Image (cartoon, rainbow, N blue to C red; front, side, top):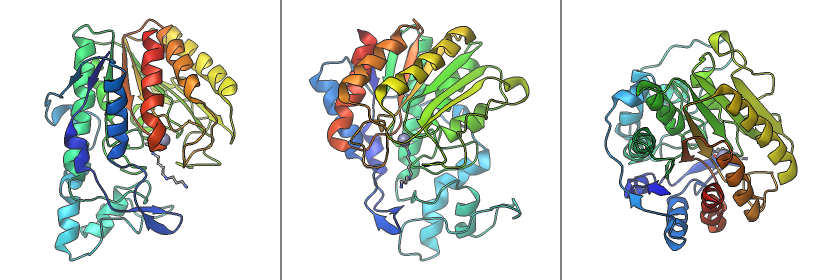
Length: 341
Ligand code: Q9C
Ligand code: ZN
């Protein structure tokens, strides 16, 4: 199983994350990708290849042009105002506020944010762009006939919506990959999001679409981030009615319960008859993850990788979250090895 990876992820190295009322060292840090790459190599999973550059068109296919332009210059614009720290939004266009993009950078940050823990730092755009190219290169491998591929994306993407960043995400790598399948001949694509957190960005992008099935297993938004999307009654709208499926689960959910939801979700994927499957692979479901509350053990990741393989679909794994840095390499590669059998 081939891994797509680039060192450019290291350019995303923020100093701050707003957490518990403090600015702390980010949970989403460069060492995450290095632990995963290290395990890919020590387990001899397969070749590790650099991404190709597919440019901006496939990014603009899923994201608002002005939002993408904003991301490119946000840190520079912030620094030009003389602010000392990293770029963090303060005010957001909440209920009954005008949905109009301000001119001043602090206002722009709020307009384009869906959460405010994520600082924009020097190099963030370059890393986010490279991460999207890692996703696109993985999709291309499948389009060229590979049965499976691992896009070791960093920063992650599934909380990025059409025009908002947040939750450590800037561009929605999995959505960009899924759209690239469709734009290159696929009729239908399924995305299964197994990250601990609801894939609010991916849901947002495909909510009214009949060519993408989105299935997400996650902590109940009543109890955890992203709080404002991910309920079971969000089932899609218009042409996409019935094609958005959420499985919110409570604190302390064990693997047995989680796996039952996965089985049900994978059955929906089978019925949808997609040409390709994209897995938003977050391993923050792990029992020792520092910011999550499910109880999966390392061996469980092997088991559910095998469950996914049972579908027999061309499958692209796209890296999302997972924060217990010591273990995320093992857990991530366990899924891939379980898939390979
Ligand atoms: N008290 C991903 O896994 N903050 N993003 C959580 C916990 C944001 C997670 C706060 C978590 C974002 C890709
Ligand atoms: Zn997550």
